[in-house]
Length: 216
Figure 1: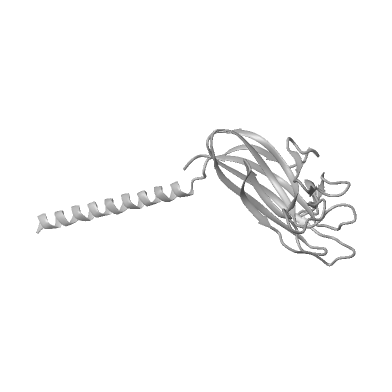
Figure 2 (figure 1 turned 180 degrees about the vertical axis):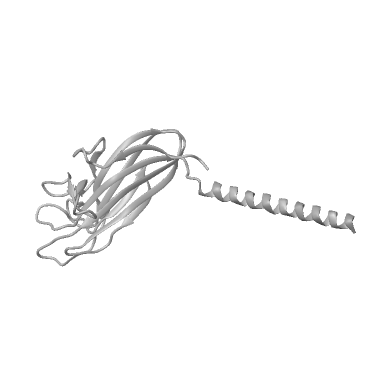
């Protein structure tokens, strides 16, 4: 009987050890899953310098960035009226009315940067405001697109805007890249005119981050 009791005790100790090791293994796996992915910040732009900070503006073939005064780096109070910060403001649309061909027109900002191979991740806080004394609604707040090497990798269509309305979004895109130089654009377009005498929504861009993530 004593031999059987000793054997049972050894089996219980062995099972306890196996359970403990399994628990520690699961904890290790869970810890691995929640570890943050390494990322290299290539560019961070909050426009607090009052300038474009290395970005350049561009217009599409029939695009406008707005009437006199646009584009502008100016104070924005979207999301924080107590302590407003600087942001890029544009008022995009068609320069000349074109109802049937390449209707999405406007422009945006761009730059080139050099990366290793991996995934490039782009993020920005974007938004739209609309105010008009004559029109209660505008059919397009703007189409935001992240463009890498002439390829659209993410898009965000704001849609119709009511007078006095404001919307904002965190706009993120990610795409694989090879080692080398890459052209990055944040493009904003609308299918209607914008310019002198043409009431249009105002788009804003802030807190841009360009990061490089490793290959999985």
